[in-house]
Length: 162
Image (cartoon, rainbow, N blue to C red; front, top):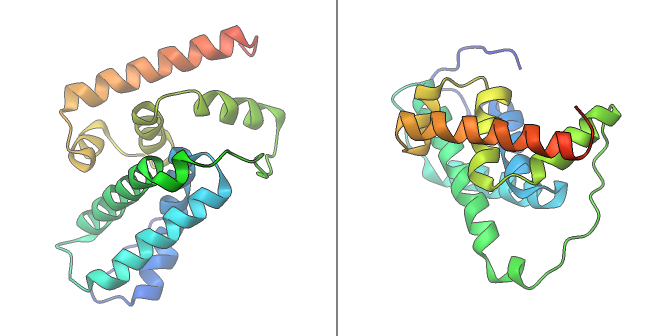
């Protein structure tokens, strides 16, 4: 996604358009299905519209959206509805077999590892940015990223992808 500077006075529609990919990808990484990610996505931007406050800068807005996406995803996982349902097959279209394999293996990671992997690799956030966003120590983020990589490598070896 091309990064353009948004201004604090930009309209809600522009903000949603600008951050929609980031929020959706993170929601999908945390929930694992298109339909659940759609629900989280909708809830995040509903909260954004209701918030009606200015942010200090774009990094503040981005961090707020990431934090709300994570919170909404957590609420989704903890909801009674989710606990009483069974997952249907995913109807995600992947470009390559490697994409399918990577998606499958990423879903095996605990949520805390999937989110740091997602923020680091897909959102190009630094360890410091992730630390601030998730309100965790920098050393914790570094450890989680290292453990996530090791687990992912182990999963890939078990499935003979590596």
